[in-house]
Length: 281
Image (cartoon, rainbow, N blue to C red; front, top):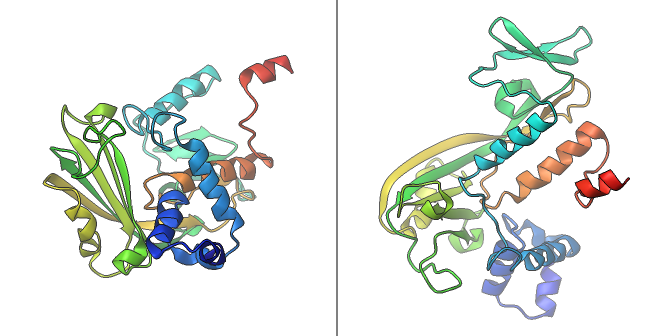
């Protein structure tokens, strides 16, 4: 990809913008790799632009909590059952080492397979790959110098600080959403700053991003482990996801959903087939 940039004579700032804000690469490792994937990522960005307004990104009203709510309704249609206020105390396995259920107290919910994040599966099913710092900041005004396509102050935005400009190994991400998405009180804004921890002082690492936010009313900081599964789950039927990475656009999470589907079913998920197509077949 570096040769492509060189061929077109692009300046360093333009390269940073394309690689990190358009192709959404988390660092510069892609520069020494094949150009095809990066060009496809740029194409995806451009194809997404103007699909739903003036941004290539969409975000659900009522926040990400709206996604499991939608899943629960769809699950109910297909006779799925939600068990609320039930702590998970462990998984149950048969003599062959295959999962047979989820234990909660003295009860076991029978299951032919389990899909979970690393916190439910135990340390043997995942390995620590690093740490992530996230700062959730409550604001009383939009992030300064951000505007919507109409010129008014932005009610949402995404800012990516390329790692090279901060002399880091990983980008820093800022996502701002607000009362307009029904996730905060009227005229309040929520900015989330996140990145991979690289030093012994994580809060100092995100200070350049915090300074961009303007006055912060409240700030909540958390440093958590980033874990990845140690196997594909096909042997014991416990399919473990990775922890959420620091990116604010959830591209890797979306890819993992597709990968998880293939690991469980053995085939790719074809989202081009609609319900009407299935009825016609």
